[in-house]
Length: 98
Image: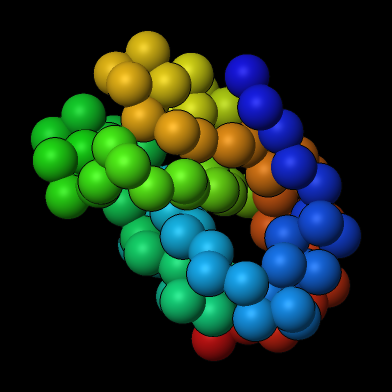
């Protein structure tokens, strides 16, 4: 499984790089703040909503601590998607939130 650190994601966003972020936390968790531009698809719905993702694009998967995003990353990778798990999750995020 590919992994990326919180700092690396913050740098990508600061450089205005095109980044596709999927936040797999529950809706109630996301209401406390998410990475700007992140799309919320709760882990339990990934299987049913993965058709919304483009297999030609790269995605960074985010959750609270990195555990659920790891599960989602493994699942989506197995389905043929280009995904990377953000280690540390939102607990380690120090950047801007919306």
